[in-house]
Image (cartoon, rainbow, N blue to C red; front, top):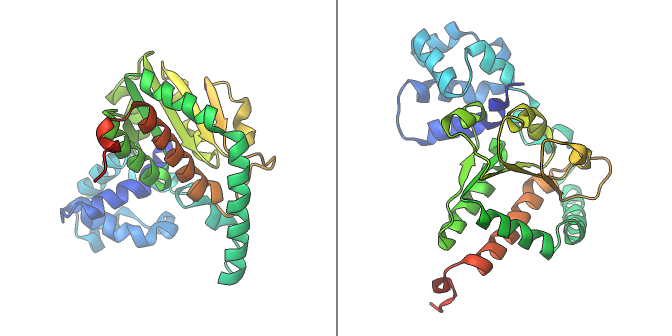
Length: 269
């Protein structure tokens, strides 16, 4: 699929939350509740129901990172949605789900003490600090974690770039040089697989953060940090995607601020 599809929901939300009730807003408002059936939607249907022109639909697709409406439709797949929903048993009641989730989170914490111990996290914090330009790239459903991490590093005077949509224009918009660091975050590995051809074009130090051991043999990265010890590479409940990634970047932020943060942060309020 088009790698930009992984940021499509994030881009849709930006349009809907912009407060600008223009053509893009009308198109996004019409398509959002119909994404699951978008293959059956035509441009004419959008024009008639969103009250926009054909050229407006074309411009909307271009802004989403696609060349045409057909390209956009092809980009919408199961990868757009939280991966655990595709594997979850929706017949399971709340109590059963909570028990499974609690058990899985506890197991995740125990594994991550081994896979990404304090030394590993501190080493990554120092690597972030050593590079003048750091780019963090992820699918749209992980963007909240990286945006918060980006904001927390402001307190240490560290500026990072977070890319959560329109990935194909990343290299042309701001060429990534050899002095840069590119960090790709892909808990399930699906995003990383689609992102591989772009990674190989980047002349930068490259790190992959994942929970899928199947990706450990990838040669496009200088370093791979795998949060999970599971051999199956399948996170049915999305525990690493929703909780593990957040936990990891919380630890990384704490380490970075401790090492390089302003003393002002330590003053009592």
